[in-house]
Image 1 (cartoon, rainbow, N blue to C red):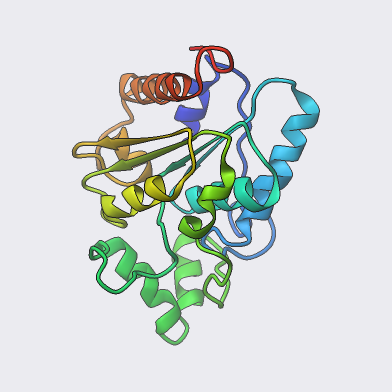
Image 2 (image 1 turned 60 degrees about the vertical axis):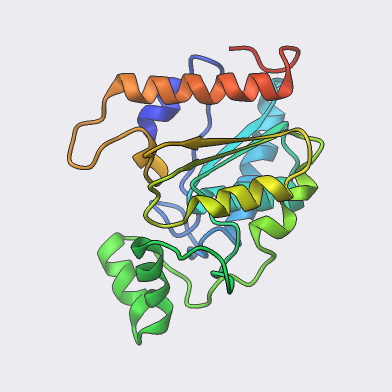
Length: 223
């Protein structure tokens, strides 16, 4: 992700953060629910430091945080949820979620699950599951700011149907970028067990910004 952030600096300044429960940030991880407040706080900071358009990009849990923040906390000039879930829980009749997602759900079902997961990952995980409005239920409120939904067809956590659900429920202007064979989050531009290829990262960043520019028009975002 740091490689991607560095690549995106070709197009403008980039701010990154450790969401609550991660790294040196305090608090407890809520899988994108309360994290929307973190994204909102950074968005407000960026607004004070630059007059440029503010684009919020979030991966996986960060995708949920970006959608909820842009819709409910602090507006942005564009939102880009990548590899995100549409709902907190799989809905009846929807496509089956991947093994990664099912394993994550066990964290709250097994006794001591959150403590064990925290010890293994270094992430401080809240004991309660998300209770706020789901990303799909609020994404329509981001309009008229554009939304670019990005997802891979081989995402081991969330099926591509969830990306299509987010896209369908977003307001205009909006776009959906489905990457054939793409994995989850950084798996969209890396391969397991291989060094990060700078060319793949740069290519992903360039395509992302290009699609965003086409969505919004040349007046606001320039590649």
